[in-house]
Length: 250
Image (cartoon, rainbow, N blue to C red):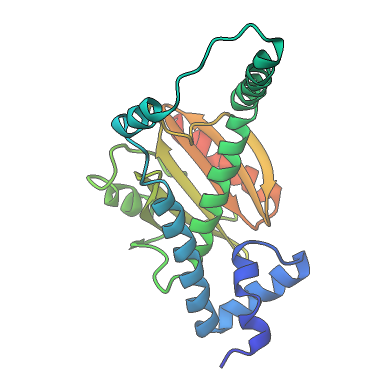
């Protein structure tokens, strides 16, 4: 049975709010504790469901028009004091526009990485992390045909430290994609692949960074976005990314 000390850390672990040592200890505990692993999966799934539900409602054009019609009409005035609020509002809108143009892409990228980290944790905490279990890329790749609207190549891993464990269909912004699980030593790495489409927020350029407790590398290739994420060191993440880049170009 799990102790209260571990139970009390599950939500903080899901939000990556523990120290590095506590995160490491919690990961080791989860390997041997089915109860805490199940609770963690529930927390992560609730977070994902909440995020999705929060994006489902948006006001209609008819509702916005009714609200605007109900607002009192503005009265003309030559007083400079009447112009002050408008000038302040204009300045505020300029600041918002600046932040939207220059700060919004970075915010979207952070949100994307956070959601992918949640998906990575939820997958590893699941009793069945992959839907197709195989170390053979010629078995895993065909499995995705008909399940996602694009195809991709999986690298040859012989003479490398990586092992393919399998894959599953996953979703981001309600768009289907592929999640591949690779193993190196005692670490598991998720590779997410999504199709770039107009209006999606996960199209990104090449970058390498550390998000929460995970290392991340992302790039675009042939209208596909690749995200490699895991707690392996950044060199291992980059090595696997290079193998995926080579496979995509062959």
